[in-house]
Length: 370
Ligand code: ADP
Ligand code: MG
Image (cartoon, rainbow, N blue to C red; front, side, top):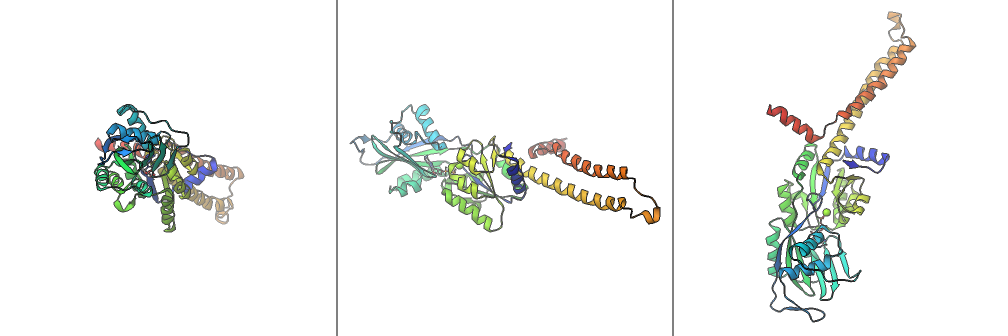
């Protein structure tokens, strides 16, 4: 279930949760399992073999490309880096070249670069390659596109001036994502997906999860995500941002309610006001549903307390005395006072009977099935 840092932030988060009308999801690790796998390695053949800084020639094969990528990614914490390291170790049995402690630099939301004994290695997406002045030849572009239309993330691997390979990285949507999104819509939420990944991959996932294309924004840097949250807020929406990574923290902090995925980074958890410990999206549905149920109960209790006091206070004050010549004995008045509090407490304790939305759904299914 969700965790809150203290009682004040618990009540603040609850009171905000029941007003939220727009939910923005990050893609990688939030809607997807975050356990990506390298499924494709496409070597890009250049006419001339590349010559490294030390005059080392490089011939692109699946294993040599994975070795280059693993060299750059060996200290990165990104899920894509983990996938590449796993492919190097288990799939191709190659070892990354040893690097100095500060030889690799991570570019949040785009890729990594490092200085290796063979020269400069760059691993990342299109935007990253372009920002490093590398040319995406038509063959590189079409290899990437081939992977992206399958919903895979295409990553370029470059050595010095040339892109020598494209990796296809596949990540599956979380098992409960589809159901959770449907349940959130049923609670009246508008659903968005923002990602640093490219458009084609993002759209393929959005299609699977029934998120409309005009609610999908791809190629976003951390500040773009925060800007989108701000834009929706300025249109009068109460926005919850759900994310896991370093790249989500500005948006988590900007949102009315930031929700971090428990399996995500520490920085995301610090920027958020709620954490889904089990990283399960059903818990998110419970958080919003429970907030609505609690607030309904508060309003209900308030209404009954007002009605009760409206009737019993004039009664105790003797409104009927001129006609009945009877007064309410003080101990009865005292008992009536206690009863008003007891009824509110009992009504609130009934919240213990709260059922998670999926339990309610199963119960309904069982009843209909009879
Ligand atoms: P999301 O917003 O979906 O969580 P990220 O912002 O973490 O995604 O990453 C956006 C894109 O940047 C990735 O899809 C990938 O193309 C690229 N990228 C980020 N970090 C790395 C890395 N360490 N290695 C390779 N590519 C990376
Ligand atoms: Mg992410």
